Image (tube, rainbow, N blue to C red; front, side, top):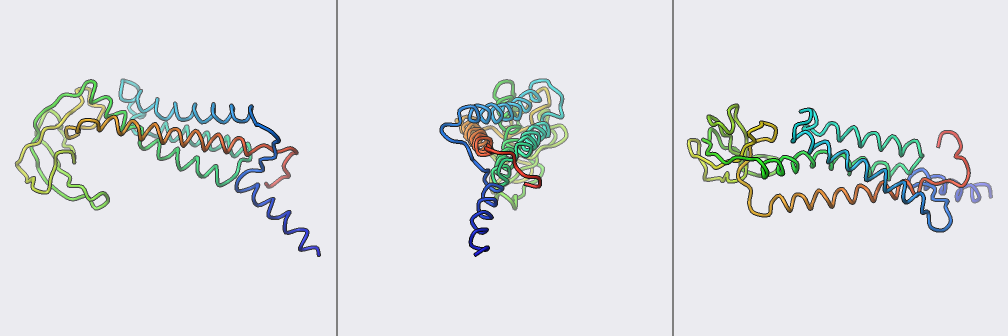
Length: 220
């Protein structure tokens, strides 16, 4: 008899730890606003720091480490709220993806605004094992004085000694790239926007479901 009565309590406890207790009644308006604000602020920091790095801020911002710090701070905030572990993990994963994607999109925006097109000589060609793309290393050009790896415009038929059109940043902040196809930046921006929305939504759900009617016991 004791095991029958304790099993539902344990299941409820486990559900609360994984997904949050969600003990609110009615529409959690204040919690919803808090979650949206927290998620939006973190997303704005992730994307904003990447853009700032491309437009004259500290070069450390270009790597996305500042964005990862913002995501870590948000995850710590959710831990303090005792949000569901699964939702905290989801927020952390989405935020990490956002932090890694934002610098690439910011570089595309910078190259579109101030990038210059030049012809670069191909020094080597190889196939990337991870993405299956053909990668061309280009050197001996004002666009890539120290060398650069590009995949746009690089094909399996490309050979060392060939030339490729590349776009480079005269300020030296955005990495040199092959010339983008029409609409590529727009598609990348839409993917970044969609990922940001998913990140904010996950944060909002985590905050809303963290509400407890009573104080949580220690160790939960």
